[in-house]
Image (cartoon, rainbow, N blue to C red; front, top):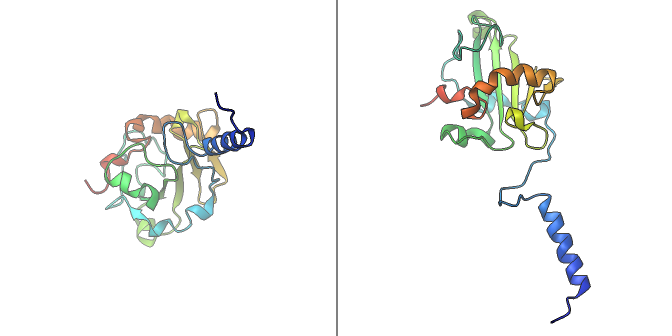
Length: 179
């Protein structure tokens, strides 16, 4: 039986430990450790627009006055990270996907593009909670009101409806935009 060089064994073990922090055992890509904030969605208007026309009314049946209610005009945008998966309906969406919903109180506000309420969904395995699909929800473009899992105020508020969209990765987008 050959002796194992202790120095080589320590280096090898260190490399394996270091790599295991970034790559899962099943070979998935790196796990994000990024912390998200308003700078990550400040240019959302340049992203892929999911809604070909603004949606209004209650397209999901779960609105109940949220997102400016049934009179609102809403547009939804998705960043490059999630665009291809969305277009190919490959759920779950990848880590780093950001979805921004604009809600205007009525058609006049929409036409003028004045005063939208922004709600943001960020897919983050580092910050999100498994009980809500690893999403973080932000209320408002400044990102100050934030929720993750069902044990947080905003996570429960958003997650209680978005749980009905679990088959499409907690989104209601599978029936919107290009088919």
